[in-house]
Image 1 (cartoon, rainbow, N blue to C red):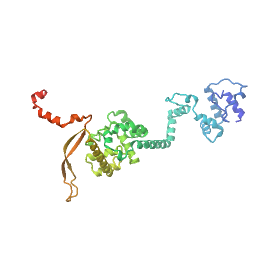
Image 2 (cartoon, rainbow, N blue to C red):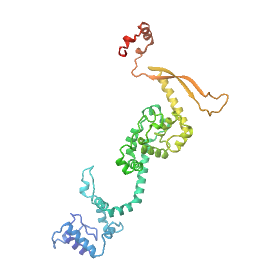
Image 3 (cartoon, rainbow, N blue to C red):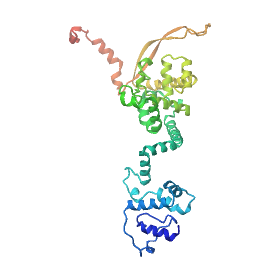
Image 4 (tube, helix red, strand yellow):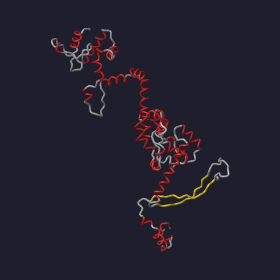
Amino acid sequence: MMRGSSRILDADFNRSVDSGFVDITTGDPLDVSSIAAAPSPRLSSHERIKSAVKILRDGRISIIDFMLTILDPSELDFAYNLDWIYNRSRQEKESVIGQDKKGKLEKMFDRLFADSRGRARILDWFRPHAIAYVSDTVSNEMDMVKEALCRTLDSVTPEFLSTWDLNSTMRNVVVPKAPVLHHILRCAAQSYNAREKNKIKDCSTVWMHHVFVVVTSFELINLDFLKACNVIITQLASQRSHHSTFLTAPFTLFLWTNGASRQTIEALYKCGLCISFTSLLTLLEKLAVCCVEHARLLVRQPHVMCYDNINMSTSIFVEQRSDAPAKVQSGTFAILYEVRNGNPEHMRLSPMLNRALDATEISFATDYPNYL
């Protein structure tokens, strides 16, 4: 088709630079001054599209072939048209920030996807691309999760353990950084019907702060209320970096304080749930040093000292030798309590002793009348 005839066709379709149409044979904006001498009746957009489709049909060119030619970057004659497909219109650029900015290209995808025939073909085509895209997204998310959960053994202090809260950290830090991975794990943990109908079992979030501190038996933890997805994310972070000890270090301490064997801890270490037993011994030594140093500072300020008995039972499988420890060792240990807002004048011993000497006898009838 010659350039002149293309301009005649453009004139018949009432095309102009203002409406965004260009000469498809040259990619240049249409020079409307050259065709102003032969005006044609104004056609509606629908009529112009019908005329364009008829031209393609008469030329034995399918719409798909037409689009493939326009989208081919090697076809320099249609580079201008190709740019118009991808560039956002003025209305899209001027839309309010935060609102949905769907241009004509996105609307075309929506209509293709809304048709069952188009959806099936799009999904078949997109499957390998989706796997690669999701894989890259999950990998980037885990890099951020790894940084959020990164914690060396030196940073696991008594202060950290006293304020450690898995639930809030996972909800406020980890889940926002790994939304795609978290959604995938939730879909793997529960079917669609289970999520819609089962209102009792919830795999999302319910681990409390005291789970690893107070609970002495895992039988008390209902598996329905485990934060399974988040624990899996911490396992993956631990496999990604051995410095991701936000969950593994406190959980290993929980197992050790409840008498878990070395073999159990080592097995869970291989699963990414614990630190190794050797690292546990190192951590215990560091925590002991921190606690002793804290006690040294505490005795220099108002405090309360108590004591209690302790019985330590060792394994029956210890080596029998002359200097081996006894099966059961008994003793006494002191406990120091920090006195908050303590006044040394209120803690002097001599006034307490003097008052004790002048104190009257306690009468159950007069001092505890409410219990009679």
